[in-house]
Length: 178
Image 1: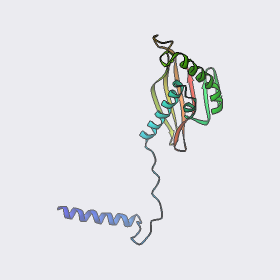
Image 2 (image 1 turned 180 degrees about the horizontal axis):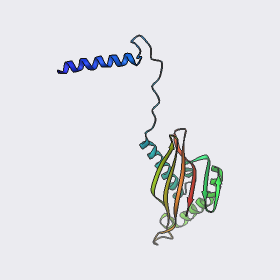
Image 3 (image 1 turned 135 degrees about the vertical axis):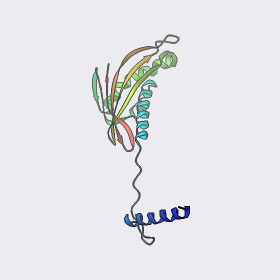
């Protein structure tokens, strides 16, 4: 079969399919917009990982506003020492710690006061198109002065429930356990 014959068959098939699908003729106006592009699972996974990265960097950098920007307004934080409901309650819980860390950092320097929240073995499970849970292990590594070794002071597991709001993945609930 020649290339010309294949092109003819392809054009005929396209014409049949277009007619069967009710494609508008050249004189009809197209009145429906194409469907909005939705994100892929890979794009959602990367966005979720970025939200969680910004969360721990906000903690380690004592960046309260950056930290809070990763939470929904109605977020919950649940830990052994208590439960905090809403972004403002969470702010009141973490603000004194961040303020103290920033003051110590100003006096002693970054190397003497560094903290690192190390998160490992993240497993993302999509509950539906706009909700996911991320289970992971975490370690809290702390500097105890300039020139001194850092130590793992705390470790445990976490469950983060994220939701997509206005196109952004945010933490709706965070559960941490030793």
